[in-house]
Image (cartoon, rainbow, N blue to C red; front, side, top):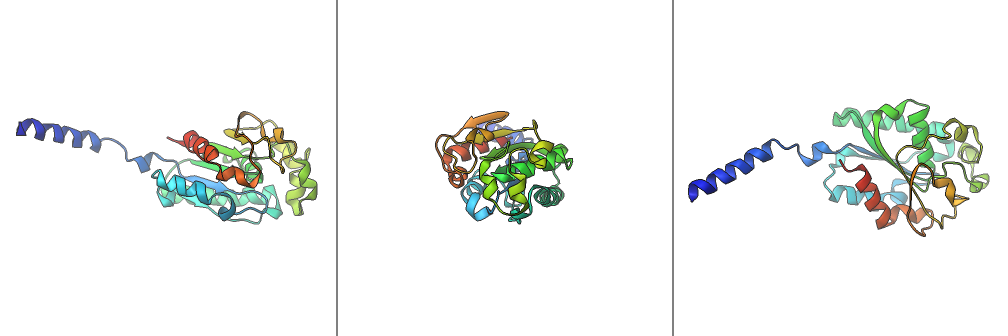
Length: 211
């Protein structure tokens, strides 16, 4: 009996030794906030869930950038963050999670800046992919970039990678179906800022980027 038990334990340990660790299977994740957003405002709850699921802290990159400077400037910052994260983790690709204008930043980085080869999965939450009428009230280059028909919108028109989550009740993405592009899913009735705090959004995001 002891021999059988010993052999069973040995077999289990040997099989586990050949399994990649859960952490090594994860792509590192970059979180990109939107216009006048921040990690604190947009991603605190979601990042906590990623950590609870086993993502190592050094696999999660979140930062605050000057979004008023517009999409191109944001894409340059994102490029530097992706390159730094890949170097730190030794990985070849990242996953990206965005909110609002952050989705335009990420798409611009992937399409115009050549970043697509470094991105595995991307989830865009409440992104005005086709522009928003609200942008006429926004400040700086960002306001110009988010207007329907802007040069930025036109440069990435038709390029809608990843999963795109949208809300019927979004008061910033006007009309709301500007966020409904490509592979899109409705998240119900959520106001713009609250979308990334939705447990529905968090679960959909984590399921999509899961190895």
